Length: 341
Image (cartoon, rainbow, N blue to C red; front, top):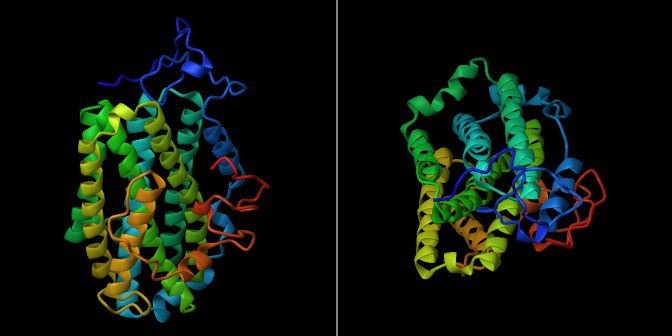
């Protein structure tokens, strides 16, 4: 079992070098002049510099597109994709605050998890702006998970790992939850974003795509949070990264890929220009391979990126290269170095 940290622990004599991601004995004071995980503090500054608000995005033209510019399949696909994103950010906000952060015993990592939870909540506000802008019946999109069995089934699948952590907080379940976050942030979200970019590429729902760009910029940092946590844990606790754990993680990724491919085909129905079944299949497998490689695992599928235009479409003008390669400059509103990533 791992235990929740105490919110006030004056008896602790833990020094900065003794800090652990979980299983430590912190005072719970935020002594940010003493940092063990420098990557976390650097990421904190990136997240602050990326601050934005949904009201910055002009959604006015999207209502016209939604009511007259989308094909029937594009419209229902939009609703389904948006409803799925609403669920995932709602889940992640609660998961981070109630399920993950209470067991994290490094103050600098507590800091970025709280910030991430704020950003996930901000994304929920963003979706509210999108729904309000385009829909005559907002409840229809918010309640879709109640009437769409495919969406409900996917939501249940995603929530299962997090529920497992809540019910049985062990070292192993903590590690598995970190990998589950890689899947959520790095596969499910990215897959959902690609639908909105595809519509925008054809000149439709441009405000929605711009909102998604802001959201994705946050999700890039969220993916890095858990990528760095996993890689740090691998160094500190190699005993936890057993062959058995690796097998379970690989199976998690394989199941997630199956679920996401099926979902992508469901919302597109082969009727969305630029997102064929073959492209969806290859893209999801590419995402899985990339996320696994970043945390020291071998890729499963050897997939190629089939829609590289999505990366360019998602980027901001001052973003010079792929964030995941670690060479980005001027990615956010501030001027920051990513050398530590």
